[in-house]
Every structure is written in C-alpha cells, then in structure tokens.
Length: 226
Image (tube, rainbow, N blue to C red; front, side):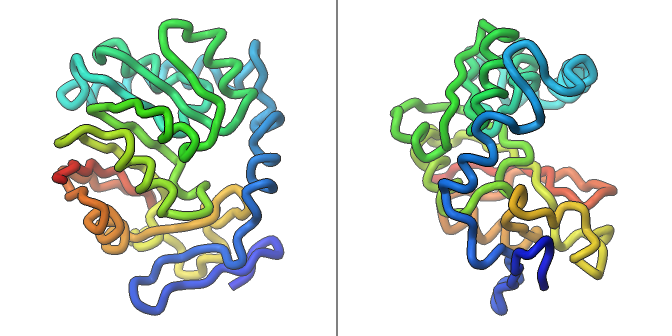
C-alpha cells in the first residue's frame, strides 16, 4: 500500500503496519522542530478548548497518579500534563517540537519541560511512577525507541497509559489507505491490540486495564513487572 508517496508494509507474522523505508531522523526532527501546528511561545491552536478537555480527562487518572512522579511523553503544549499535576507529586513533559515546548514553558511554569527526542530524554536518568503517552507512538520511527525509553525512565510497578490509533479496531476502515490515521510522515507505525500487547510483554510490561472505544484508538494501561 502507498499513501502520499510513502510505502506502508505489514508484518506477515503479527500484522504490525509501518512505513518502509522510514524517513530519516533528520527529516522527522525538521518536521517537528519549529513549525509544527503553527505554535509558538504565546500561541497554541485551540488552547482554550485543550485546557478544558484536559481538565475533564485528567479526572480518570487520579487513582493511578495521585502523589506520584509523572511524565508526559509527547506532551505538546503541556495542557494535559498541567491538568494531571493537580494530583501528581511532580510533572515533566517531553516533546520534539521546540515551538510547542516554548508555549508549555511560558504557560505552565510549575512543570518541567524538555524539547528533545525521547531517547535523549531517557539518558537524563530521571525515573517516574506514571507515564502518560497520548498520540505519540504512531509518530516514532521505531517501537524500540519507545520501549527503550520506558525501560529507562520507569520504576518497578510503574504504570504506563497509552493512546494511539488501533489498526485492528472494528471501526478501522477495511481500505486502510482511506483511514485518516494513515498519514505519513506524521504517522509512521500502527498497532492492533494483539501486537501492541506483544511489544509491551517483550519489554517487561503487562496489560493492566483497557478502555473500549467507539473510534479506532487504543486506550490502555500497562504495568511494569520487571
């Protein structure tokens, strides 16, 4: 299958979908570095509605992060992290988009933000009890980068919340080329429920809780077991 000149292939063993060949890390960094979403230090698209949605969405996470150290991987403008930190002990956000992080630092000064890729962040030797990652995994060039980061930054029994497009959902179009979440070079890889669980299991995380969704999206918690 091809979409916007990118070739997308499927693993014959587990149905994992991914762009092949992948754009280089330099191409991806340039895509997000300074113009992503048109954000800058004093502007973020739909800022007001994002704050409101984050406020309500954060309530479901209270039992999992209360008085714990939280990191948001792919934090964008910092809206969700700030909402979560009403209950957390500390909050850290990471995003490759420098303009998004500029907005986050200016508008949410009580949290700590880093404008860098997740592998660079993993080398800072910071550890967390709860990882929030919404709509990041599909943007990465490799699932290994994500799992290496999780292994490096989580404490034993830490929880990871992940949302991402679900390629195996009943509402996913049978003609994948028409699916709006197939949009390289922004999205580069897509998981179903089975191969996502396999990926986490291979790296020491087990399913903890899953929310069933009407739209083709994962909404799942994993727990680190070793």
